[in-house]
Length: 378
Image 1: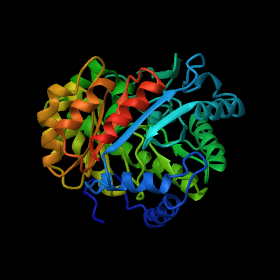
Image 2 (image 1 turned 30 degrees about the vertical axis):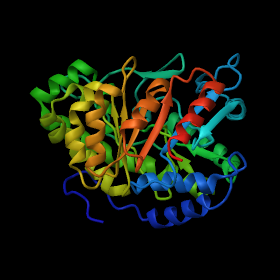
Image 3 (image 1 turned 180 degrees about the horizontal axis):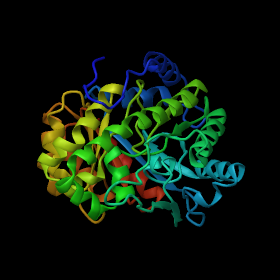
């Protein structure tokens, strides 16, 4: 595997072959929470190959007990056993439809690397917020190393080990969002300041993005060693299974960049990460990010693109872009509203297609939608 040159410090991950062998073994066996997991895994693998077994992937879930909301349980992170028991109860009261994986999510909010780099993290509702602190001269920027005793890093590994020990043969471990280097800087520098840095000091910005990559690889590798080494399968918040190690590159910061700026500043890191892991789906988040779809379509190493329509938006006005993504040879996952699923299914090719259904009214409605959806491909 040849990696892009530069000072990123990324190296090929020697465990990739062993991880793949383990994931293939896991995919061949039923799970306690998903007895037909081998068939589900084959359908997911067909997605990555831009093929179709019998129908596109359908990922949707509903809370069977709305009186008890399902959350990230962030208020329990200082009580690992209570957190874990609450997450298991969440798993038990989740109705999964179609190809949805049974999962327990290990995380404490987005862009976890920010916390590992020493940022102050505020727990707000069911998510976290990172306080920007890097000054205009970047004189107080971190050294982009993960201190082994960082309390968030230590706790995340503890939770991953706890969940993995229970998950093997039963359900799938959902890994945290480590955060793209550009989004980590967006959080640590602040949106306005970072946008000015794009103009005033792009070299410093680029150097920081490059310097973050090795820490991302360290965290990525350690978490995979914990989960796969413990005999469990894994996924991310997109809910996709892969019988090969895969990565979820992203950049919410790209919504503030022109295509040229995105390609120059952000894409080198994304490409390094893709090539390091070997299989990836890019998280293209919202209408403002859609301007970068053509850049991503032109990356041969990228297997798939997920498009998130954005709150209050429909995917239907973007149907031409979605078709072009498919025509470019990429698999496509669309996170869309309940109402958009059937109209999109009528327009898009089933090969390498996945729907992640948002805004589900209730469990019965989701069941009916899946039944109608499935009949389209008989």
